[in-house]
Structure formats: structure tokens, C-alpha cells
Amino acid sequence: MKIIARWIAAVASLAAVLPAFSAARAAYPDRPVRVIVGLAPGGGTDTIARIMTQKLTEAFGQSFVIDNRPSSGGNIAGELLARAQPDGYTLLVITPTHVVNGSLFTDIRYNVLRDFTGVVNMVYSQYALSVRTSVPATTVAEFIALAKSAPQKILYASSGIGTANHLSAELFKSMAGVDLTHVPYKGSAPAVSALLSGEVQVLFSSLGGLIPHVKAGRLRTLGVTGPKRTPSAPEIPTIAEAGVPGFEVSGWYGLAATAKTPAATIERLNAAVNKSLPDLRERYAGIGADTAGGTAAEFNAYLKSETEKWARVVKLSGAKVE
Image (cartoon, rainbow, N blue to C red; front, side, top):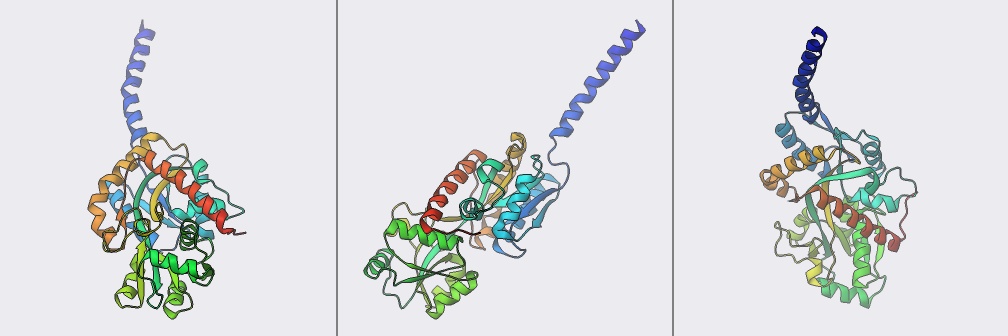
């Protein structure tokens, strides 16, 4: 009888402990979370990440720590996430670069759709189609007509082969039926300088960086690339409404985790980001970004569609990076 009594007491004791043990396992996060950024500190992506990690640190009472890994077009950052434990303690600020790289690089060690799972799209930004004021076109339709009248004569700048503004222009060429000539530069600043100096006639680039030149009368912005007009410049039409139906390119910045991360962890992170976004709208608007949000399922579907879209554009452009 004593043995049975001891066994009953042991079972009761274990039953009392198990709920606390389960609660401890469910208490994500119970230690700092690493958030990888594939670019250097101080840039736009890093700023977007730090604004959000500050809110997540406040929301969870655990540190969300930025880990900058600027190299190989974001591929080092992507590889780190792919190799991380699927526990939610390593996250990546994922951008269009990561979905493009799978088609652009001949030797890449991760696959976004296989190795990542999307958490949420945090914010998006728009690019703008801008020309020198000496170019005789004041609308997207006029620019298309001009380009069709002079195949290969109009030069467009980019910040490098395979970059977002290069592929944005290639998508525009394909959908508008025009033939522009690509002139790549080593970075966005030299590309903007080339446009201002007259070395090239057109450039797709972040709207925020071009507005001062537009206001000064040196450049003219014909359209923005997103699905709708941007609140920061509502007078500028989208390229889709101004002459190229269906055209859409957005610079977006989301959070991704390693594939097979528990669904409950993804849901907690997703909910925290969505709750934070209304409070951050003005801060993000100040750096030229609009808040996004939505479910993890919606973001994963978007990652799939973006991967497929840019694979087609890379193939059309013929761009490859060894």
C-alpha cells in the first residue's frame, strides 16, 4: 500500500509540474532574438529594421538584436537564416533582393520558398520613373512614344546589374514594348549623378531620394511603380494608371524565419508586428515607406508571386552574377 501511495503522490506531483513546464516551453521568446540585416548599419533597410525591433523588444520584454551581415547581395544573410535552428530565435529582414537572387546568382546556397517561412510584410516603398527635364516627355505615355520612336537611343541608369532599379526598368521595357539601353553604375548615388549630369536620360530609383531634385526643377517624375499612389506624393500617378496596365514594383521589407519554425511562434511575431504598425506609420512615412501588415499566409503567397515574377524578368534581361 505504501508503494501505491508513493506512486500516486509521484504522479500527482508530476501532473502539477507539467503545466508549468508546458507554459515555459510556450513562452516565446524567453531569450534574445537575432534579426539579420543583409546590409550595412545606417542604410534604409537597417533603419526600417531598427524601428521595428525596438517595438518588438518593448512588446515581448526580450531584446531583438540587429545583426548586420553586408555582403554578397544579401546572400550571406540568407544563408545564415537557412542554416539556423527553426525556433524563431533567428529572423531575417527579407527584401526583394532575396527573391531575385535565386534567379540571378549561379551559385546560391538557399532557396527562399524552401528554406524560409514568411512572418509578415512590415513596410513597402515605391520607386519612381524619373527623367531629366530636357527629355521631351511629361507623362508616361509620352515617354513610351518617345522611346518607341528612338529604339536603343534612350539610356537608363541603374545601381548595378541585377539590382531592383535595373530589373524594374527591364520589366518596364517588356510591358511597355520599348527598347532602352542599360548603363549600370556602382551604386545608387552615381546613378542619380549620371542622370543629373546628362550621361543618361532616365532612372528608376527610390522616390524619397529624388524629390529634392524634382522640387529644384532638375528632374521630372512621370510615375511611381507601386499598385497605388503614394501618400507622400499623391499627385504623381502610378505607371499602371498612366500607360502600362498591370505594371507594379514595390520595394518591400518583411520578416522571415527558418522553414519549419512552429506556427505558434510565427503567429505571435505576426500579431506583434501588426499591432505595432499603426504606431509606427508616421516614423516610416518620414523615411519614405508605407506600412503594410497582413497574415503570414498572405506574405508567403506574396513571396511566391514575387519569386516567379522576378525569375521571368531576370530571364528576359539575361542578367547573371557568377
